[in-house]
Image 1 (cartoon, rainbow, N blue to C red):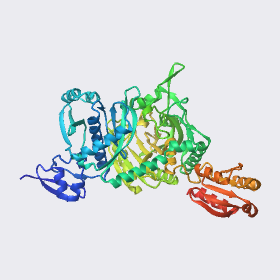
Image 2 (cartoon, one colour; image 1 turned 135 degrees about the vertical axis):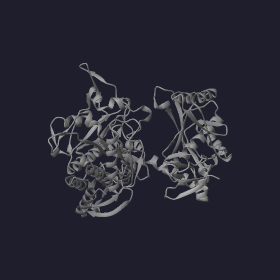
Image 3 (cartoon, rainbow, N blue to C red; image 1 turned 180 degrees about the vertical axis):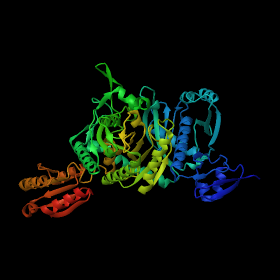
Image 4 (cartoon, one colour; image 1 turned 90 degrees about the vertical axis):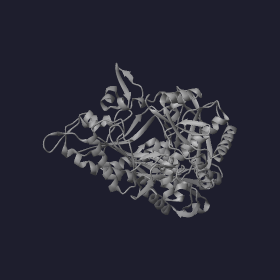
Length: 638
């Protein structure tokens, strides 16, 4: 019998009979692996376990432990849910049902689902799991696929297929009486889906466009073990408790208003104070790290965005132009063209480089209303932007510095775990491939020297260059995109900027786009959820609340209040004629880090009884010891 040879991730090789499947390969490696296998990666491409192994391929067996394994598991769970919905409600049309972080969803063209519907769908899903239905891949020509889906009344699938080139072959996955248009791969059978829960129902517009029909979206999650599902559900409950939209209202930090417009943030005094503290720290650290600060307008002539290329690649995310003096202007979606114009105001020498210019620049991007989400997805936001102009020989060093600076800033706000990606050239790009390769190599070198664990994110670079993305992990283990470092050979060429080299000739500088915190709005939302609104003392809008027990202590409490204010400790005095226990409860609700309880004994001894938010009484302290403790905690950013 003819033999084939494959290579495993550890570098070892394995010989199999020709025609063997990836399931056979998993069995040959070990019984446990075969039991846990969901799919395989062959030469970097995800495939079904039922597919035949290619000779000479580099193969990795995929389980739930990997990100790809979770995607396969949750995508198959979405199909399982859609099958249950179609059996219970045959008039419902299926649209799309992807895996997402932590689970899956499926959108249906149907009436709003009820809680009773959800219970019935879960019950039917359990029945389908017990049936152990094989999940099988099929292919057919595009036109034949269109006719098939039209014949079964799935017009949304017909629309999707109509946009695919005519000569394409289309893949489907079937399980029992259900068939769905899908690239795959999927689990081998429905019995692999052990523990699942439908989480919520929401409305969603077809393709995220409010001009399109509204669909009904069902969210769910699933895991190989019941204990894993229970742990996930606990995390979801904790995430609800930490929801920045709920806490933003409770703590009076910000609001949104239909009178103002969707996706636009109103910063209240306490929220604006925290933002000021973040911005002040950001500015101070940038000056220490050799940056100069810039400011630029909110609008520019539309022609500027032609020059930059944004109208070619980004126009759908830009607001419509406005005519002023018969000239079209546009709200800025980016800050970079303004920095390039500043560069062009003078002749630059190689001695001037690198130039590091930073701006807290507010930009405006059109996001569809269906994706707007509190502070996390908005239409107007401030980006902590910076652009570095350097010589080619300075590129590696500048990337290393930008990486170090990113990590320092993120750690200062309490984030210590990161997911790091190197995003490479996308299908739609500008510039020379040679320059892309130089830029990608420089970013790779920076990552290797940083000691960070990182992954390749193929094809996810921006149109003008490759990038490093740093995602922070919050206390619940969720990842949030923050820092990005992007190398750009394109914009310097489009704006025709240059520097005079040591040879007296004009040379093109390299431009690095760099954001550390990303959007301040989004970062603030992440901070709220990470700390559940109980900010570290250096960021808390009110750091200390003084609570006199009776009117007799008001004079001493007022004096203590003034002393703390003189030491730059943000303090409020609650001298209302209310019981002290009520005052304590309210301070706890507002998550004030420290409370100072002042009674007769404290007034006489010139002390205060110290309480820590969430921890309770810490005993009586002198004024001097309190000030020293508060200052140490604030300055150390603990």
